[in-house]
Length: 202
Image (tube, rainbow, N blue to C red; front, side):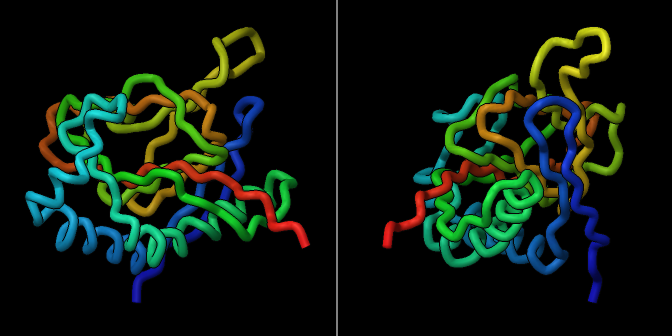
């Protein structure tokens, strides 16, 4: 059985901390199999779940994840990472995590995501496919932006994903995804927004 080498990091290039880690090969396969065998093979379902009109991405295909798969399978993968992120940032463990929205982004040559932010408390992106051959390091990468660059102040950070990478960040943090040039391969990721529900009062 193959395992990815886990390297959890809390990145602090500016004020809001960012979370970087990996999911397992089995988790990658489970999500990709759902997308390939359930979500995109059914043209009617794909059309009903089309997310492209409600998102800012200049991307051909963005599809909402079905609630059943989200609650039964995906939350079990995402939830523990959200809690690791919260605890690493000196926040409390949170039992009640709600995934408000979640969608797959299938990005191809010349497509991109302009600078934008999300809703919720914690947002994330989880990479399932990523082109190996690229014109430059920046192609297909993601930049998180906090402020303009000043002397001794780093205003942004650009991260190059790998298959299995998961990045978490406060939902208000601006970010952008660069286009891939001269490459026909798919760059596939899951993006999501999560909110932390208050614990019930006893």
